[in-house]
Length: 184
Image 1 (cartoon, one colour):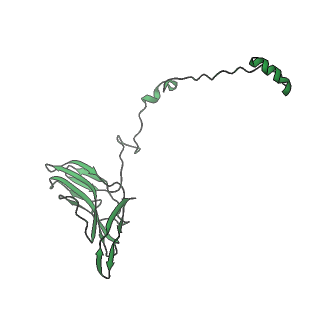
Image 2 (cartoon, rainbow, N blue to C red):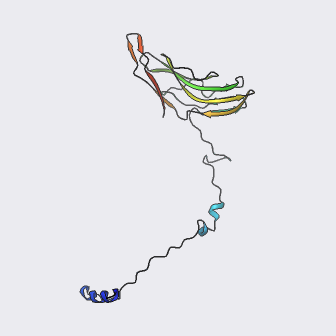
Image 3 (cartoon, rainbow, N blue to C red):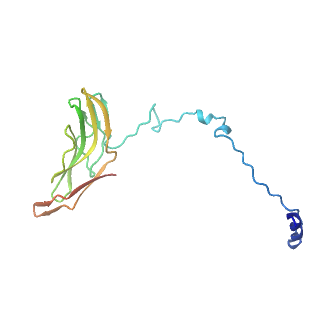
């Protein structure tokens, strides 16, 4: 018995007499991408992400910006909700040779609470943390023949700070603990 005979015999049970439906799989029209739009979609140029100019730029806290061939500026950012000294001012790196470290630092009181923040430079790398200060590398600037050759960014957010496992007895520090910075 084929499908048409079965449908005809079952139809009286439902009060409907109709021929069996013929099922065919749908045909999909597959055209190459862009054909439907005369490929104009491929020819259009996207506007820059910044909304203007020829080039999209991304700005972030503590961004190291080249002002001229031997001057940088560190863009505004905060460390533990404090505005550090040394941001948004021109810094001459032309007198350095080799790699200049740009770092952020905070002064820490006996309880591990940050009391002041700053941004500074060093030709001898990142200073070591001590009982009263903690440091984080913001980035490095390569200087060759008094001219900036490259800028390498390390920090791209404002920062929070925590001194963990710090202990004191009276007015004396017993253990400096460990220092942690993280971006916000």
